[in-house]
Image (cartoon, rainbow, N blue to C red; front, side, top):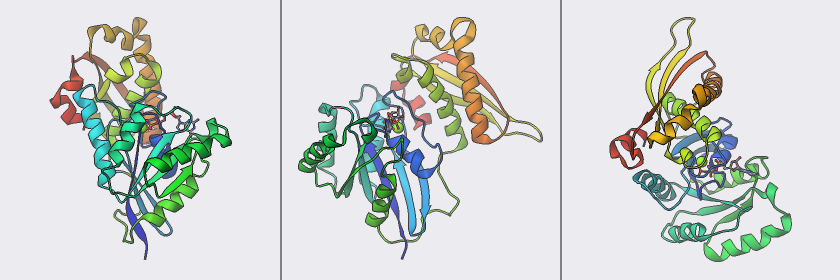
Length: 292
Ligand SMILES: Nc1nc2c(ncn2[C@@H]2O[C@H](COP(=O)(O)OP(=O)(O)OP(=O)(O)O)[C@@H](O)[C@H]2O)c(=O)[nH]1
Ligand SMILES: [Mg+2]
């Protein structure tokens, strides 16, 4: 009998959840950055194995919410601890645990879902440091497995995948064999643009920026996609930063995003970017309803 079910990735911001999802599924489904709070929504990725199908659920990092958007983000992660067959807590072993880690472990106490602990970024630390870390986590939660991994170089990711299948219930595949994700193309368009904003800006901007797809035109014969997006910022003073001197920054964002979008669609892309100030959009339920 084959295995089938849902496996979620939860953890603190920046732990490497999305990097792991992309590596396992073999597609870039989630954008990744070195800044915390990159993922804002639930991202699904399906992988088929000879002995079963796993539906992976990547989630936003759990953090202290400062806006309604953040409350929603954390809510997504909390739901994904419960509504799955197996949860994977991903921790970054290269950083010292803090209050946020304790908060997250506290949340796990009310959850009955079996949990695997994936100790990520082992490429960054000496092997001797691992055992004490594992010991500490063992005392804090009855994890069913402890797996040191590196989501970037792939160390032990195959071991982790074997364990996922082991802990999943028997069942027929939930999705057709060629199904990868439930996110629509529009979502990937806005995320690919946002990824460039994350990469090319800093300070408060990555947190206070959102990308909305205003128009999405499928290509006609011998044509490319025409995509019209708005980059939302929160304050008038942030607009010139995204636009740059004589439009240099918005051009840089646009060119990089267009290249990535052309790879994604395997077609030519015309990308039109606008910047708009929408004060306090992170607390605006209407804006959030469109994003979540
Ligand atoms: N050295 C090293 N870096 C890693 C590893 N896994 C992820 N990273 C890096 O850690 C950073 C965060 O990775 P993400 O995958 O975006 O982390 P995340 O947990 O999805 O973060 P949020 O979406 O903000 O919650 C990126 O710069 C990754 O390249 C790893 O195994 N080793
Ligand atoms: Mg992420």
